[in-house]
Picture (cartoon, rainbow, N blue to C red):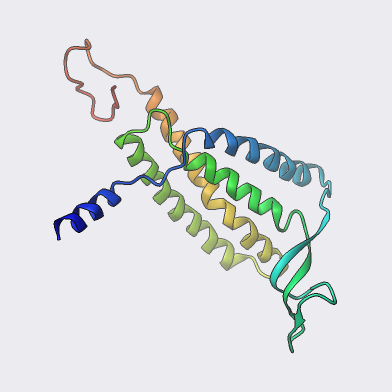
Amino acid sequence: MQPLIFNFLIRMKRSYLFPTYFQKIGWIITLPVLAWMLIQIIFGVDWDFDLKMPAFISDNGVLGLGSENEDGTFLFTMAKTTFNATLFQVLLIVGVCFISFARRKDEDEYIGKIREQSLVWSMLVGYSIFILLTLFIYGLPYIYVILYDIDMFLLLFLCKFNYELWRLKRQVCKCKDEETKCQCDDCHCV
């Protein structure tokens, strides 16, 4: 009985963060995708292109592939879609997840606490924004709200977490010398 409980407690302490080098991979993925998005928004350039992607269900399946349902949807087919509607979202989510959830070189319990608080903050703020947008935006523009709201939580988390780490680095310890214990309340002295 003890080994089962002991194994459970060991698994509870396991960290689900990516290795440190995933942060660089995340930036390599995210920066071009964000640049792509900003150029399209700011300059009104439409760089979107069509793709055929495998789909479990689609309303615009390629004829001759998959089986058509009574309601006109196709099951297990190749669907016509666009880069911005599919791969853009996937690349942005993967890149921001790699950045946000990669272990830091100086990762400790305090940074874990900041990570947790930032995640909770981003969920509360993100859902508050989503509720407001749901109440005040209707029709076709609401589809864009849903589409980009998926990314909003991760981007809010990334901004809040990095801001808190920046604030942490800026704090100056008020200790008089290195031998005495820190007297700061909010300081994270190493």
